[in-house]
Image (cartoon, rainbow, N blue to C red; front, side):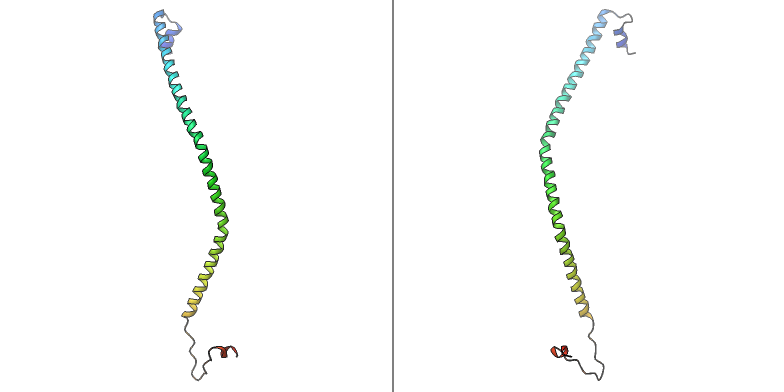
Length: 122
């Protein structure tokens, strides 16, 4: 048991010593109370700051939801545009590849094929 408690509970202590010990305990209690009051005041300030942030946080969440909705609505048209772009690139590549093939060389003695509309009438 700590010496202060031994003296307070008895064990041959005199009245003056008990009074000094009680004053010391009372002083410690006052200091502790002051520390707790300071903590409470600072926590009230923090609580007020947090309360002030609730509106901007709610607005940011609302704006983010609205942006998400807009992006979701844009996703389908973008997907269609990507497909169209891929098709046009595919067609361009096919045309480029076809233009790279050599034209057939007619065999000796063969008649050359007519060009233009006469060819279609055959």
